Amino acid sequence: MIIVGDIGGLPVYPYYTFAQTRVAEVMEDWAIRKKNTFENIYNGKGLNVPWYMTAGNHDYLGNISAQISYTNNSHKWRFPGLYYKLSFPLAHTCVEILMIDTIMLCGNVVKVQKDHHFRQEAERQWRWIEENLKISKADYLFVAGHYPIHSMASHGPTNCLRERLDPLLKRYHVSAYFSGHDHTLQHIVYPIKEGYEMHYVVSGAGSRSDHSTKHLGTIPTQFLMFHYPIGWNPVSNWGFTYGGFLYMEITKRFAIDFVGAVKDITTDEGTAYLKIIVVGDIGGLPEFPYYTYAQSKLEKVMENWAKEKDIHCVVSVGDNIYYVGVKNEHDSRFHTTFENVYRGPGLNVSWYTIAGNHDHFGNITAQIAYTNHSQKWVFPELYYKLSFTRNNFSVDVLMIDTIVLCGNTADIKNGGFFDIFISKRFHPKGPSEVTPAEKQWRWIEENLNSSRADYLFVVGHYPVYSMGSHGPTDCLRERLNPLLRFYNVSAYLSGHEHNLQHIVYPTDRGHLLHYVVSGAGSRADHSKKHIRTIPKNFLKFHYPSSWNPVSQLGFTYGGFVFMEITKANATLEFVTGNNVEKYKATIEPRLIAV
Image (cartoon, rainbow, N blue to C red):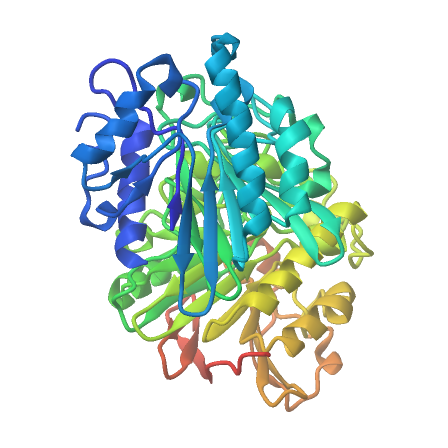
């Protein structure tokens, strides 16, 4: 199921927005895999399915009866009445959706409810809503209306719905309330009682997206799980932006994915493999030429592998800009250290990115916002989930922020060239803010628990185990590692250490847990300082082994990991900057935790 809102386009030629066309393209792609403003835009074969409609406030400024009547003239437009119920009895579950008219209930920009008949109809709808909520026996019960109950954007919460609808939703344990009106994507979750949370989803970026956070203060920080967009755009309301939609897949356990029309999250379902390059610590130098010798050499090897292997994406494990991140989303370092370095056509794929400790010394929000300015940099949130479905297997990847979880280091206190040699260093001592860390811990366990993928990877900057200069991360060993072991995670991928490592620990649940360090993207460090923390038979590989006095300046060969995943297994190839495949390993499909 796809949920999209505010698709109304423009009142003048061409009658649709740039954002709308981009969203339509991505929606069509997702639909295949899983006239003027409507028919001529959403005309892909994958979108030739029923579109169940409700009315918005702008629809009421015109002839709303005509929109209902148009149901008889379209193969997909479904608008049978101002409010109605949908029921979907599936093989193992049942879903019901109440499609309601919030303009009738709460009014419009014009005072339509002054009409006596309209007020009577509003009360009739209120009774209809409660009756249908009360009698529902569905496994999943959703309510969809135009106005949001809660919103952090320009319109904000709708008092009428907060006061009268919200208590009904909570009383009858509604699964989620879907809305639009605000031209954003939002996910808000309020805990109601033990075992029950109420989800509020805004999906109103169908033809434009609005950066406003005007009412952010109305929602407790821990309850706002996600919002998009983040970066400002002066012409956003004319649709010169990327919009977005919500994709929802319902099973015995249901999951929802927000998809911005900036990048695809799931691709190429028809193939029998997934090919990924894993690289980390690509942050270059803070002075001209802004990249290292090792980085430039490694880029050429990565480009050759990317073209020869026809990779699908790159996973970048943090420390994207040395030494203190960026100042804003237009910082020149995005180009001098990233875009101008990784410019080969083979690497013109999605680079799924997380933050490292050095990134957090700067403006981390700017790195997220840069997603809107790049053809390949994909960094939608501090932590997020990737799902790849192929024709005979699936892969889930949790991209997490270990600096939020465990705290930062004091590696660099300013951006001077030689600061990396003289700064005092220490191990992460704990999160700087407990609430965001705990929120992410809950998210991690929930997604590990719900994953039924054949391969499940977790990606973070800090390593769990390491034999290098930084060594293991106590915070992750104590709290993340038990989750990785319990939920049969295939591998934990990290950086931070400027080397390549492969460590394998057996678990008490009958499988091998792989720990991969790939942090040699712009320099390589020979240190074996913590090699005794890992049993000899568990450390399968490490690189480099020879000493280099200027390794931290990047006068070395770096390295990366190439990963090819099939139904049978996942193959890891550890490759150096002089194009030598140093080591190869395999990972078996996981045993799914129950």
